[in-house]
Length: 118
Length: 109
Image (cartoon, rainbow over all chains, first blue to last red; front, side, top):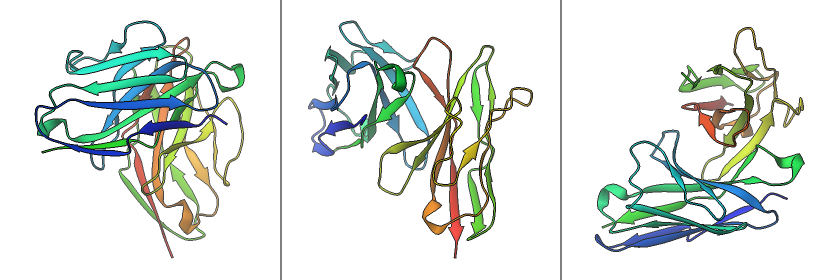
């Protein structure tokens, strides 16, 4: 149980285009989802916290107009990188916290999406 | 300030040797502590939660509130333990994590 998927697993796009990344909890309801960015050989940097049905909470220094997050249902959150530029190239990871008591306060991670902006 | 510190970026041990990955934290309340492992080209996987008091793949971790530590230990390292290990803290009443910078464990044959 507690499986999180991400789609796509990798994407290459031209500078100026927008890219949407989906994060799904496959076998549980996730009231809270998180979006991270991971640079090579570095730790995860939290970008934003996403709660179902409400606006995402962004970490300091993360542009909310650049990184649009939508959490429309208990199993799906999307991150859209708008007008992507080469500096946005990174590994984006989502995670989900479960509603069920036994899984509470534990984050389960997706496999990540590698974005390359040319 | 809330912080998770993993002082070692890289830890190399020989197969069969004991392993201890250090994690210290700074938090004003009662945190939940976790260890996650990331094998090469794989996603982060939950290894241990301190409240579960379990042993996974031979690893254990004890929360020491006096020393504000949550070190990960294994008595006999295996080559397949080679991976990146992250210590994480979650504050009470929130699902948000604070991650340490990670320690790369290399188990040598």
